[in-house]
Image (cartoon, rainbow, N blue to C red; front, side, top):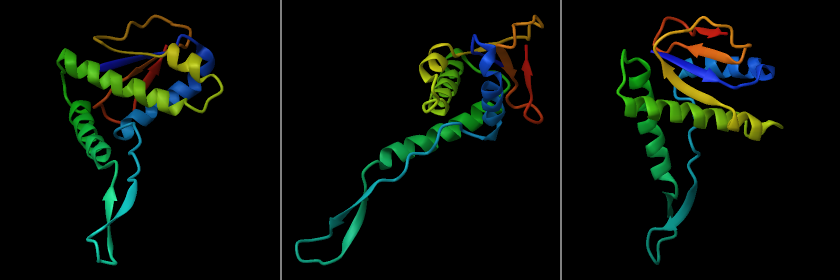
Amino acid sequence: MIIKLTLNDNDFGELLKGFCRSLGNGYPLPCPECETELEPIGQTAPVSTPHYKNADLVIQYFHASRRWNELYHADTLPPEEKAWFCGQITQAWAHLVQLHESKDYLTKNFECSFVDSVTGEWENGEVFYFFPGGYGNKVINL
């Protein structure tokens, strides 16, 4: 599998390169923090038990992480899995640049797609090709 990441601006090449390299480190989105609140056990009990308000989000995160790892190492993917994988990459990019001064530009101009081959054409440093499941963490910038 080959994933093509395009930013349409070579001024942010180092940022995109670092992002590409981070994709090989596991699921790219951060785990939500467990938010707890104490609930009383009973009317007269002085002890409280923790209740996790966002436990469903944490469970969804772990399912997504497991799915990411399975797809990351697959040889081929059906179209719906490719769309999910690219969607996760796009969300991770948006999360990465959320505090950047050019975040609107960076999120609007980011593109992710699966391709069958690397064209070899120079694309002004705006395109990175990422090879999931390969040995090492390899990217090509054209």
